[in-house]
Length: 502
Image (cartoon, rainbow, N blue to C red; front, side, top):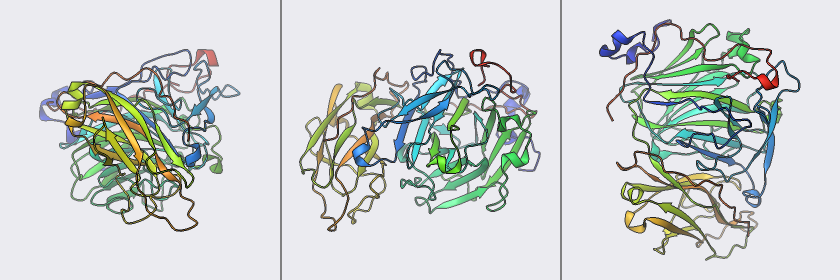
């Protein structure tokens, strides 16, 4: 794309040229409406899924509550820099949340959504995504609004990962981070680390291999921090100011544009030789927190999101039913083979008939241990996407990895389904190994992708109880003129008179 060219012109259909001045029509849009009197999980849209992954020791997977300060006060007062102390509230996070009962690190205030992940130890990933795939076979535009304030440093950042649904990994991270779940074989990753844009596209092999595009703005060693490009931008100091990010996926190019203070867009484009490796996928938003206090990132853990949308066409939503609990079958070196634990999942006949799959995260070190029987059927071996079948250890002691298991509908029944997890035979690891026996399962859900999956399932109303440890394409006309900012300038509002766009 030529510098200064009209962003989005390549995706404007001829029939849409006359509508150039019209408002865009989005095939998917989430505006996170809600103005609760306190930070709210109940106001979060249930068309999205939410998963938090903490890099914890097995003995602490489901027992340790980690806390940190998040933006917005207990009364949802916004982070006004003219108010001292800055309005904030305490978040208590664990690994029990899901799309039915999201973790406290996700919340609604002032008609937008926050994802916040602070100083919780070694490494944490918060992930949320629409349960709907985005089709960009003929090009596409993804937009969202997010804050850009300084202070997040190198150890607290966000990224967007577009991934085929059958390769979803909710806790993957870059190779230079202290988390061992890697990016899937096919992926488009856009990260905003230290306020530098980076566009990465990979295929053919899991990361760190398989990259066909992998560029930072202005080159790998000549980075362009937003604060250098626009040193007087009020968004750098005021967390309430959110800017539109526009991602345009073309045949052999991705253009990432950021709205500036005057409403124009600053572009960064990366070539993708040979084109995109896949044509549709889930759009997964992730926030990474890697011991952020090391970079002086105290109390700036929160990202503010709004106006998430893409132009389509979109694949029909998939339905989800969640397990009623997590599974904890781990012990330090002496978990007996044959120990079991049971959870249940309620399913409808439509979900069973339309390509059901079991998705979740597993924590296990010694291969062969994870066995699953559904409704009394034969044991099935469950393994993560990535593991060494000939090795003894599946990663380090604190690694969670995603898994996906296609389900035979004949295994399932309308109503309650019983999933019995059993500690299976395991290899003899070297003497002196500190690896724990057994395994844990979290974020467990049945996803249904068939034609009967036109609407999300109604989730249960409460958080699971913890087991103690023993259609036709829609083309948009993207405006060629500057798009006005969706955020308000800094104000001197007091905590009880916070602007809507905090």
